[in-house]
Length: 258
Image 1 (cartoon, helix red, strand yellow):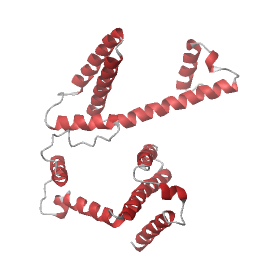
Image 2 (cartoon, rainbow, N blue to C red):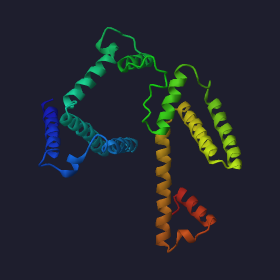
Image 3 (spheres, one colour):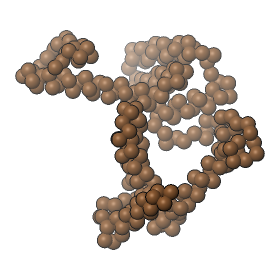
Image 4 (cartoon, rainbow, N blue to C red):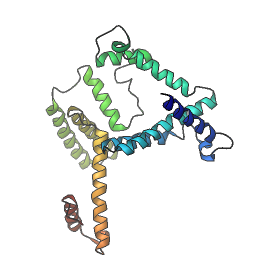
């Protein structure tokens, strides 16, 4: 415990130095608002390390996430609003309140109890079940959370087949919108289709945000193989026909490009 406290105190001291007059100009210039992109970026980099089961990278990325906590706390301390001790105490108190079955006299526990405790803490018992959700979440994650809360009160398909049928229905509606060519309606139908696909993912216990990220990473990996193959063989991708590009793509999928 002494080692943990010592290392943590050192981190706080380093951040104070970086933010001081003799510190780093970049660190001194940062605000809560300017750091927002880094909070999201570091969180996703941690998720990637977890997905890759890279414990060395996880250790590094957890540190980067912790840096954001310390950074924001130091800025708040300078503004006189709160400091890192307040952050830790708030978290400690919250963990105790939300686990009465561990720290209190209530032996029973359920997800519903957890949500009820959260609602009381935030003073939003009177809000709708979906109105309590953080609207700043990435769109796919937001859609899933809304669907989960709607399902919690019984507004849901009996099984995944209903959700799949809804996807097919939305595809047909998109086709009709494409025939009409109205951009506003196309945007709406694409949104409906994405929302329906997220619902299927929810039924299958698949995180849509991570699923799309992995699919994107897979595309990038295969496309990089195609580009590398083209360079090695003196080919210009822009000059190839669609059939030739498709052939290269299939070879990349099959691991045939070397």
